[in-house]
Structures are given as C-alpha cells and as structure tokens.
Length: 178
Image (cartoon, rainbow, N blue to C red; front, side, top):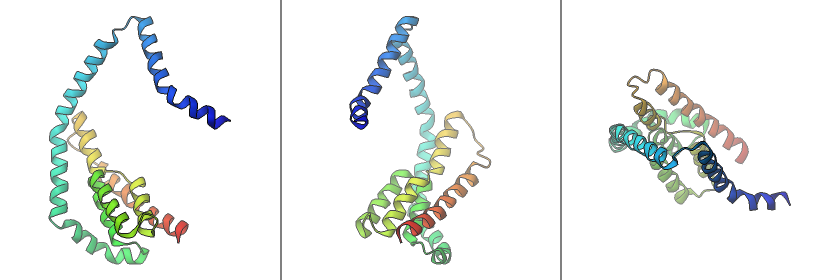
C-alpha cells in the first residue's frame, strides 16, 4: 500500500517543487527568467574557463594509456596483487578510474564481455567503480573552476583513498562472493 502511494507520488515531486519555486518567486516579485539568464551566462563563462583543464586531463589520460605506463605499473604491482589474490585487470581498471570515468566504464564493459558480470572479476570491477572516483578529473575540474593552481595534498590523499577503496573492494568481494 505504501509502496503504491510512493510510486504514484514520486513522479510528481520534482514538478511540485518547480511549481513551489515559481509561486514563491511570484510572491516575492522576482523575475525568474532574468535570474535564469544570468545564471546560464555565469555557467557558460565557467565552462569556458574549464576547457583548458579538461583538455589537459584528457590529453594526460591519452598519453598515460598509450605510452604503456599503465602496463608498467601493473607489472610493478603484480607481486602484491598475487598476495591479495586480485586480478591484474582490476588494478588496471583502478588506475584508469583515477584518470577517467568513461574510460573505466568502457574497461568494465570489456571485463563483463570477457568474464561476465556475475564472475568474481565482474563483481570486483563493479564494486571498484562504485567505490572509487576520478581523482585527477575532479581535481582538474573543481580546482580549475575556482582558480586553484596548487592542489597541495589533494592528489596524494585522493590516490590513497582510491588505493583504500581498491583494497576494501577486493576484501569485501572476496568475503561475500567466494
């Protein structure tokens, strides 16, 4: 009964909120269209400021992937991976995830095609994608949008969080699904 009411009401929540905003703006005599245009102009200017940072991060991701640096990193970490019994494909996925979300999702789909989504590596990859973030992309976009040039400790802390998520993902998936 409650789930039926929620399913009926859920599609109406956002239109209701928009209606409330319009009514409130009308009562306060706010020109909504003018405010919207001003916000859109500010958003466009912000997007223009971000373009160099986005181009830089995508070029860096492309160079990192095509240069073979990821293969070198995977080779260096292979002994550690064998200790914790993690597949090398997932380390590769974790490294790419720190750089680019769409590239990592593409790699996850390749893992699904090769091993299946319900395999250990498929579940591990899914858990990893859900528990890590695109550290370098976030730093480039967010810091670039406010003009911060020195990220200080953000990159090491972000990479440590990605590493902790990798280890936790391996542990959790191994405990729950093996």
